[in-house]
Length: 124
Image 1: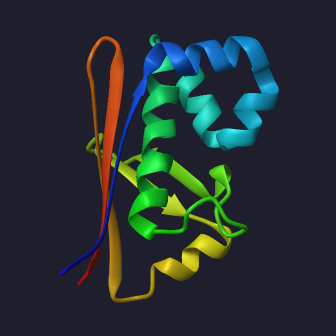
Image 2: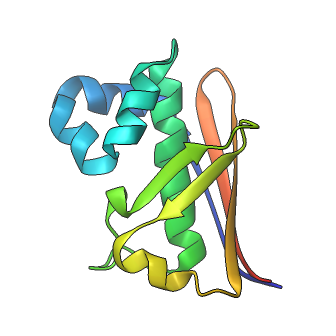
């Protein structure tokens, strides 16, 4: 049973501009060390940063946290499973949203200019 749904779309150029303007400060505020290393290893790094940004926004919406003290950008880490499928790992106080009977799934898609992510929180 679905209990939370979130979606986000972001322009890749917007994330690129933020990284170029704010540099390491922006990267460390929004992304984990693992995410930064992963994205920097890719040819189209800005697309990968944008994908993770959109995923974090979508997860926030699915969890219905809003931007409160429980939600920090780095408390959502986006990884790729061996199959390539993206997965959101919740850290800190956000872990409390995933009781043993709940699961969070994300799906990311991109075009040349935009990235979109949908996050679904459901009860098993």
